[in-house]
Image 1 (cartoon, rainbow, N blue to C red):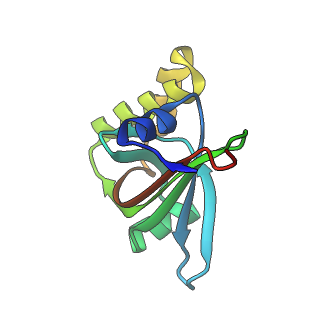
Image 2 (cartoon, rainbow, N blue to C red):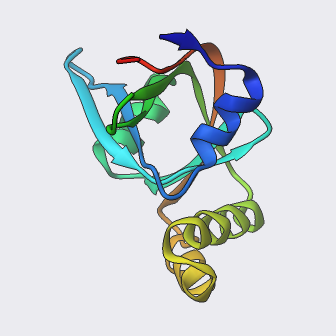
Length: 141
């Protein structure tokens, strides 16, 4: 096993359509983990979610989150990101990021449709600022 370089980590996170598993903390302290689509803005992780979802409510109450992205094929690899989730308020940025994320997961032909569908009132644009990152490759090597 070895640590990934920053460039390897970025390439790993952006490869294909890997989802991140987002962990938040419920009001009563129980953990909540859910897969999310994401993209990167520099080192920040960008995602969208509904304001009334468990994760949306948790992020607005307590911005501490953790993300995990992994490769489930040998020799296995993963990146975990602990950080603060910040809800951004710009409708224009919500549309831009929802479209960009949609393009990553649905292809360029579905990007605009996904963006319009997810850039509506009640949706949140979330920026995760990394505080701690662990990135390992060749787990079983």
